[in-house]
Length: 99
Image 1 (cartoon, helix red, strand yellow):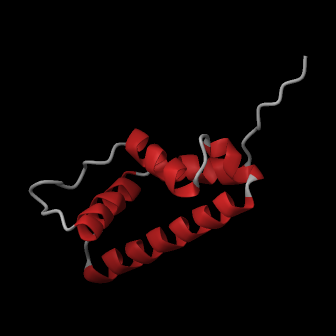
Image 2: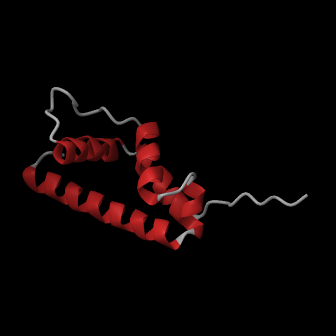
């Protein structure tokens, strides 16, 4: 019997580490508040758990499993964009002294 399950590689590991980073959860909290115009009292920092982050990332990359990111060019491009946007947010946080 052949195992047809796609194995994750470097990109799926990057995605997993990103989702485990509590700062990425804060980024998603602030992003959701901005995009949906939700006040802080309705969505405080710390709302996104690592599982929520993983769910969001899979949806954003249009995959069912992070392992698929290594085998799907469009998903890999989206992960790169997410990482770039998150890095930009982190730089702005450091500049403002919010780290």
